[in-house]
Length: 351
Image (tube, rainbow, N blue to C red; front, side):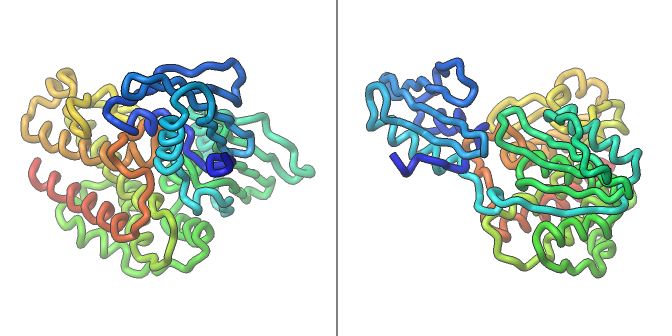
């Protein structure tokens, strides 16, 4: 069926899509030893359904619901997968950007960071002028190229998916605000109005501004520069990224100031536990270290908001009830504004 061929799908969402088809539908198991071809066995309303899946090396995915029994149900589930796990048009196109201000120490840190999360191939020589690093994710769908030239210029190319967001996350910490703005101008092919962004952040955070460290100020200022962009895009998800990253760093600061250390990666899974859909609370161990009910409640509120938005948008364990992409710029702007308001209010309430 041509409607299910060569689709651009977020492969990590396929099983979530199956489970969200109906209350009585769930993924059972996968069959097949080939890495690129699997049959997914599904139970729907007590009936066995089988969907064949072909993971193409170019990143496209083909679904085949016309195998086994109950093919009509299988076709309906495949239609749901196609919509639920679709990539935006923007995510399907390669982006490029470069920077001349990444020092060797920071470039090594970037590589180390990427090797912890993805597969980084042995570097290739670029005509004696530098080295090319190819980064792939576990599913083999997301790939990004970094060329580090001998003159310290660094060239990035790939699709704006998970690897890009992780690279972008670290670059916002390593580069100055002006360089980060230039990166966004190259990615989105526009000119960004960066005037008065520092003053604007202090207006959003009149009391918590001095509590926020310089790195986080830079990250939050970048979110405000993106808020100024007036351009039609099919996906505004990256716009919300920096605000939520800023919330993550704010939470880590509050936790550290109250005796709870965190890892660099911001999943907080050893510090918070999910007690219901999108509702998180501190573990007993973390709560006992903090020993302040008010601070604990504010951290619980921040983590619940953070997990509701950041995990579905940027991680591979999304919640079915949350949209995978932000198609409306106003929604991205609301997330940025709400995140800044949450930082300011909770800071004031725990003073």
